[in-house]
Image 1: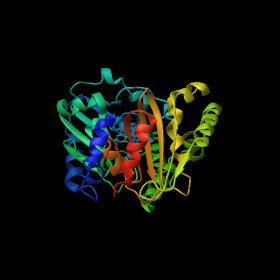
Image 2 (image 1 turned 45 degrees about the vertical axis):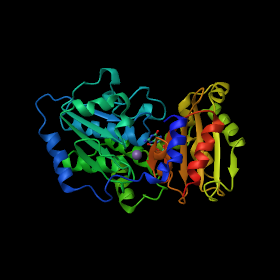
Image 3 (image 1 turned 135 degrees about the vertical axis):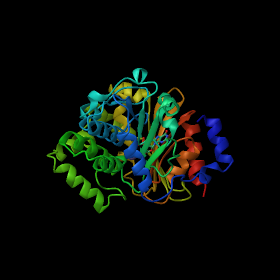
Length: 355
Ligand code: 5GP
Ligand code: MN
């Protein structure tokens, strides 16, 4: 969304007004039945395409590749992809199932079955969203409360801690047993979206699922280090710069407090780092206990920023992000903004001040 549109949305009061669209509650039995039939009734030698959201995170990739490997074990030919930029960056370049990935430019134009993972809306599928019109059937597998139900069959559970929770049930219902490779994908997804089993939706059922995954022989210490506790020395120094310039605004977010910082393209260049090292920055900034809301702006172009928002509970940052053209979860959301740093920050302050 352009800054002008973001300002317009703000003044029209749209930020707080946009709410969840998916029904709260578990996935209906008829949706499971429809999904199982869609998989079982495929023609001989079907075209099956799996897609996940742009700039995929651990849940998007892990859910997609875990499901893809499961379908392969069931004897189905599967291709998987995600919108450009089509790059698999660390720590996800070692995920099992990456051999299923094809460039989005060569993905089937009209698959018999399309399955979408961890995408709350069609826009999150970028240039691949057109497959929703050409596919025989499309199944949306997701856990965002803001999911717009853009497919033909919806396996969407906003109470699921990760999309991979839904994938595991789908594989179970299809009769596909978990093996270590599938489990690693689903474990990466689950530990990513629960922040290493720390966030609110980390229920007993989540730990039971983790136990089933670990029982296949996974090495959790190795996976966790790769996901959360490992980055290049230059990235560590870059994090130091970003933390040193962080700002705390006690009055922001209607008095709940805001801590924010930013990383520029020049920071990346100075430390010789690729962009993906910035993914964990928000976790370093959100620790400030004085602030309910944390925000990190990552420069994407001369006047373009990708913004991460987190709340400790007092603010629905998904509503804020949706109002500014993005999305996410109540306590973890994001969007892309055009403008200078000052301009984008004032739009964010304004949105956070709305009741
Ligand atoms: P992160 O801050 O880690 O990039 O994203 C946090 C959450 O917000 C994730 O659930 C992610 O999918 C969602 N999110 C981040 N950026 C966007 C965006 O531009 N659009 C939408 N719809 N969701 C986003
Ligand atoms: Mn997710």
